[in-house]
Length: 131
Image (cartoon, rainbow, N blue to C red; front, side, top):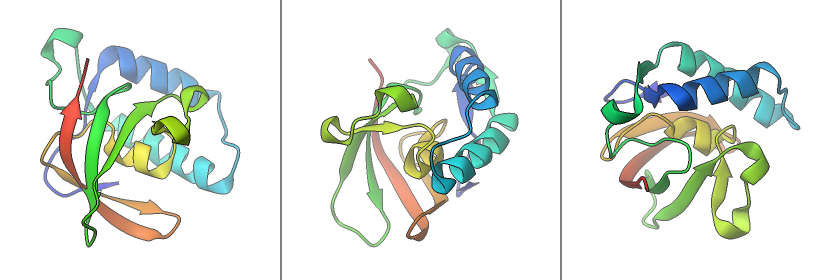
């Protein structure tokens, strides 16, 4: 991932959950495997914080996020979840899917670039809702 203007920030509990999961998961497709490997690299450089220090506008597991891809006018709304909870009908996207891996740890207003199956895409995070 190539953040355009910030550092990845993660809650310590999300970091532990994700690293434990990724250490024992190999993906179902080549795209998932590549995305999982890229996410593992990103997690290594993340700034880890406790729950009470985590910014309210940062993307974490179970965040509801509104994003817009560069060159597009439509806004996508999704919830970032672990792979076993992913359901596109409910707009729940896996953290190991390319878009999910691109978003975790970044904040509202930031742009991130990530290699997705259709090529490198840049997304702007318009809104983050953490309940």
